[in-house]
Amino acid sequence: MAMDNELYDYSPITERERFSWPGGARVAFYVGLNIEHFQLGTPSTSLNEATAALVPDPLNHGWREYGVRVGIWRVMQALDRHGVRASALLNSAVCEHYPQIVEAGLARNWAWLAHGRDNSTLQAGMTEEDERGYLIGVVETIEKATGQRPRGWLGPALTETFRTPTLLAELGLGYVLDWTNDDQPYPLNIPGMLSVPYSVELNDLGLFTTHGMTGPDFVQLVKDQVDQLYDDSAADGRVMALALHPFVIGQAFRAKYLDQALEYVVNHPGVWAATSDEIAEHYVRTFTGRP
Image (cartoon, rainbow, N blue to C red; front, side, top):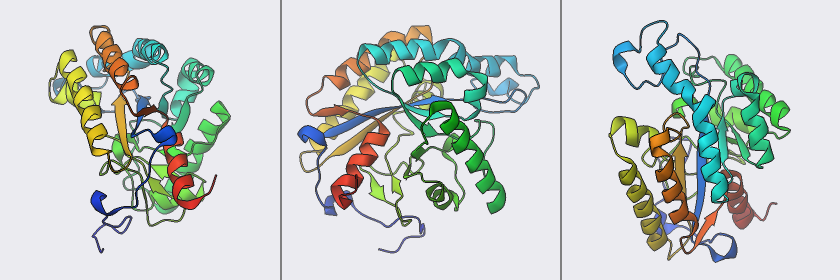
């Protein structure tokens, strides 16, 4: 069915071929862990807009940097307690600036997705030649640091150009998370490229900083999400993505609420705790027979 967006076709979830997750699981759950570098002196995600345009901006830059200095290690402990492997949404600049985080993720067998060079650089306005060179640099830097070529992509601030998925496919990537419009993976109109669900709603950054929710609110939202997706999945599988940022959920007073949320999800009937790589791989294998 024709749409304005030529990247994918309209497909109501009620009219698709049925499928299930490994072991008959009904909900595939993954944690999208944003591991990011922000350029000093460049306005970006801010807790207090009053100082966001100042150079330097210690208030907001320090808040963001707390994630890689402290918060990420607290989040790792929670993931470890519940046997959850992160789908690491990795700025390639992290490999240079915070190699200890990459080393810790490798020890935990995380999945590594490309998340741009840093979260201060967006591709909007790049020429095709510039964007191709930029993406090559991102992918090759992550591959060199992790020993694995990334298979998935999340744009900084979920941004792309109209060329991005095609250029990523040329580099051997197989899926993007940017189009947060579904509870199931689906094929894009680019050979070998999928959209895998991600969330701007079940996302600590928006929940805590935009909507002002509390830790108990967060736990209840996570419970409600998995309960509803489980009910929906009586027909076929669903995906639950939990988007986390260490400078948000990694704050000390929120740690126990992440722990409570993970405990509920991983022990929920019919939940497969996976990575986004594993979700994409299973979907492709189910519908194409390709390994």
